[in-house]
Length: 258
Image (cartoon, rainbow, N blue to C red; front, side, top):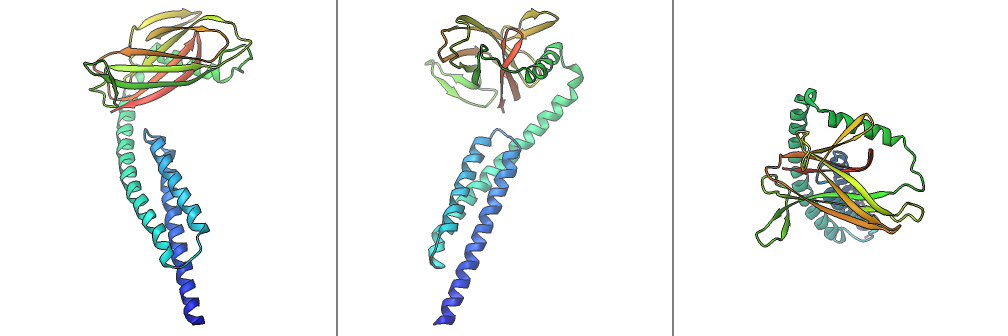
């Protein structure tokens, strides 16, 4: 009986170690995919969290070989989801690489607006925020298709998009100046075209081409600003959304249409 128990225990330990090894390998696959920083990053992180939770459960588990089966079943289910998600991520990665090649081939044609943006980004990284400055958070851009009923349906397919919803939040600041605050919103498509109004504003030696201007009544309290940018024939690829307070870049975001 002692010999049988030892054999059973060795088998349990062996299978448990193998399951943990498989789970760690799955987690490593997610880590590598997340590092690509693709459009599926949030989905990848959510699935990785499930793997990490299962690893913790298996490490704490005590029992026999049969008791490991439920954890194996959970692993097989998560692995199937992982294989599908990683395949989708790989396809998206290939599409992004193709878009990158296309953009690189036209790099010499970058206009003054893009050069101006790069300069502003570099300058603003060196600026220390002061207490009286407004803090802009949660700048987001979402693509929608407007139905005949007026309802907006989220989509990432370029050919269906006709509305972009751009939102940002001005954080509360008791010492900031109150009143009307004007911001310039700039949306640049994958071919470096500025969308929207394409109006220009000059700040000293720089000229900013913007998509539209938005105003907010600021009273030292947190306020969220949301605007809709209409359009058609949107290009596929990576989009940049920049938010300017006069000549200062205060927030930026990206999104991808396929």
